[in-house]
Length: 310
Image (cartoon, rainbow, N blue to C red):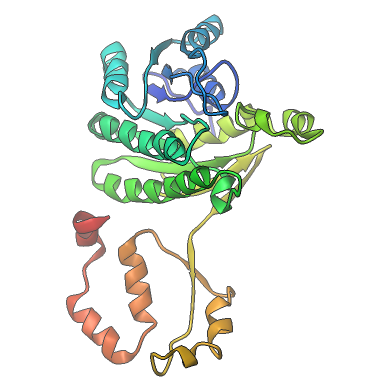
């Protein structure tokens, strides 16, 4: 396969500072011909504020030959203005990378990581529909549980559900959406006070390794949508929300479940769903013949289901 290029395309990358993943995403795309619009607000991982990295990030990118502009703004309250600046500057928008992040309270974490990703995507949606655009949302392995930051875990887990929903909604308009759980040396991992951790991450998990896979997902020839991947150090794995085969109780009583719970927990047979309607169809299909027959009489087709409620 030839080089994956982005000539003539425009990408908006939020949360771009002077090092880390945001800058790595912007660099990777710019190196392959994409014009980039970078955004930052200046929130740190201690919950405070600092100088936005927008101006310096643009300087770094342009110094390397990139076509780049910056827009300082809040992805929650100024999403429309941020997106419009990208469109005004270059006349189109093909790619959105929802990378903005910050520390702080539960509400701040939900706002920046989740609500910001939704609002930027929502503002960009008509422009992406016009270009057959792509969205990359940034989740985290913190979604498996982050005891020190429940707000972070909740937001990053919700990002995966947001991504799957965007993928369903985007089918009719040619918009694709995927998510990654990156492992890299960034502003967030720099705050982890574990002896030797910084050296380990710097050596084995450079941001550029994550950015390389991100560029693949964002290329026009990549058809994947609604997927989540853990990415780092050259390794990529697929992350899924799956359902076991389960068990059907003969009678709906609490006493039925002690003898069936091991069967419910058995993960030998797992099914991956891509929408709530797929899950409901699978779930009813595991039930008795009368229930299945009644469901077939009212069953919503996948195409109709996407329009009703993706």
